[in-house]
Amino acid sequence: MNEKEVSAEEKRAPGKLVAASLVLSRFAVQPHGLLIGLLLVDIGITFGVPVGVAGQIRSVSYVVSVIVALLMGVLSVRFRHKSLLVTGLLLLSISSVGCAFAPSFVAMMVLFSIWGVALAMVGPMGLTLVGEYFPREKRASVIGRIFGGQAIAYVVGAPIIGFIAGVGGWRLAFLGFVLPIALFSLLLAVKGVPSTSGSRQSALVMGDYLAGFKGVFSSISADACLAGNALSMASWAAILTYAASFFRQRFMVSTGFASIMMLVAALCFFSGSVVGGRFVKKLGRKTVTVLAAFLAGAFTLAFSNLPDLWLSLVLAFIGSLFAGMRVTASNSLTLEQVPKFRGTMMSISSAADNAGSSLGAGIGGAALLLFNYEGMAISLGVMGIAAAVVFQLLAIDPTKAEMRTGS
Image (cartoon, rainbow, N blue to C red; front, side, top):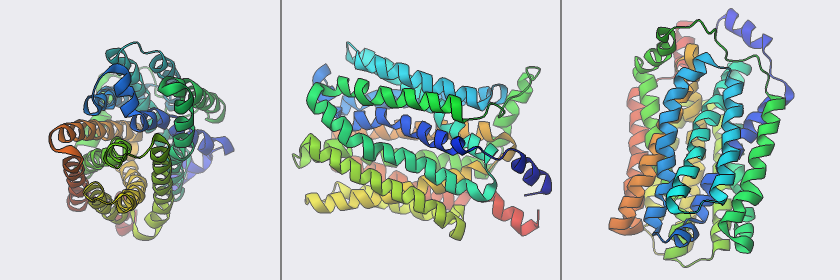
């Protein structure tokens, strides 16, 4: 890091509410996905579709998110990053209300897809703001806290959603938990995040807008990060989208037990994300990314291929732990790839993440219909292991390269 960069970072020292706002914004986008994963069986019953088909609600929303995230690569050059973050949180609130009153399965898919739009805006802008307001040595720690907030959403949300759904069904869970969290996060972002970040002059021409895309896609290492993140997110869908349904249908556990299971998995993910930030400081971004991606994939592959409930749970929890480590390390690695165009880099990374999640939900659903849960876990677990190979062979840590060259 040169003296000019240090000086710039010192001038934009973050206020006390910045980190809290970014953590809560990541927290707020999670309950939608948690509700779908936990109550997928119930939603399928409401609309008269099997679980494998109901799971495509999430898959379609990720397709929408991919398209919007690519558009964000342009919008992040033109508009303030805070404005894009706030807009995403507003759309999140709209989706919460819409899903609660969805009259049909098709309407549910459309209204839930607004969450995909919000996801494409909130996620990358939150991480971009980390790069703008925090010095490099603190970024991994802040990113760990942000993804820790994502996991805490499952810790807090799983029992609350399970309780509300038990009282009034999955629709009430949208109104009683998902909507209030979205609104509170919106208010905190408006108040807590400064309005001085990420703006560009209106005189920019299309070539300027596309320069970010050129900068990202001309880097083999950046492309490797995108591919590795996509494969890892596809693998994570095995636990995030289908694990609750697996334990409910395979071992006949109750919704309450499944919500507790998701809570423990979230705690494991939270622990991994926080510890991942510490390991990044000691071992480096790439090393932690490769190891965590491999182990997360391996445990994902194994968890639904065992006949014992408790052993299967343990493997799912360990997979969640390493998934948390991977997401902190790989996002730290991705954030440093193209510093000049962080907004574009993280927007495209969000597109890659959501493409992977959509691919995972789609492939997982197809494998579930064709080969049951064992086939689902094997196909998605292998994708996690493949991610580790991509990171190892093609990705580099630019900060280490700078240290070696003395820049």
